[in-house]
Length: 293
Ligand code: ZN
Image (cartoon, rainbow, N blue to C red; front, side, top):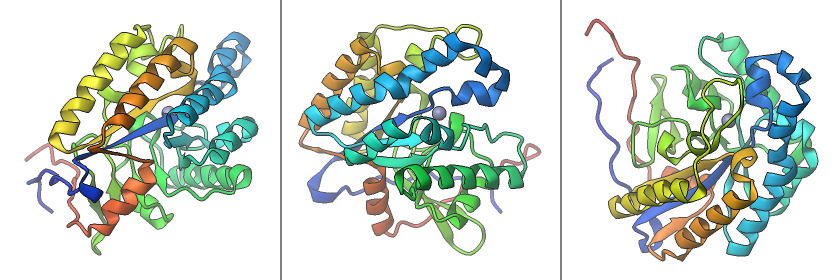
């Protein structure tokens, strides 16, 4: 094993496109709160705030996407699918991708391999039961993978992960010692609406309400730079945050702008991952660091 790392190479995008983009949504609803503290289930006001996501935000976002003609990727915790089955089926009916996002949005840091397998299996079972879907993609709750997670995902049949932040371009993430790999579609905190809009009293990591204009300006600046670099721009939004009317309106404007860029391939992540896999890239590693190096 070596600690010498290399960066991902630029991608040659299909059909003469210079860059790629995806609108993705993590349909968390109340799961991050319940995963952190199950007793929060007793707080009706708090749960109502989170329930707005699937109950109102998802239909509003779907309407905006229909009007612009955009298809995207929705990462759905198994619990969300079971509790809000009607809304999750609306996502499927509109032709969007459903991805795995844990069962109760369980953080993976510090859990055992057996627990991690259980989260995967429960999420898969729920998505299959409610939508008849076997997801190709995985996004870790809070974007936090364990070093063993890529192997568990490969073993469970996933094509890609979208949780890591070490590249501007998609790549094949090597795991194990038999040449196996998982397509990685990188994300980052800049392109996450949580950092712009998450105000949940008493919940750590939440305390801002920025204007939609400020958030869209940030997302657009990164889009234009990624477009110039030929990278993959992946925006992550949460329906309980970005599903509010003023924010949906702003997001719809951004969707229209990205859709109007003829040099950008706008697609659900699973289609981008299938394309990356077809390119037969040489897998690269991201090894666990050795602090005594
Ligand atoms: Zn999430």
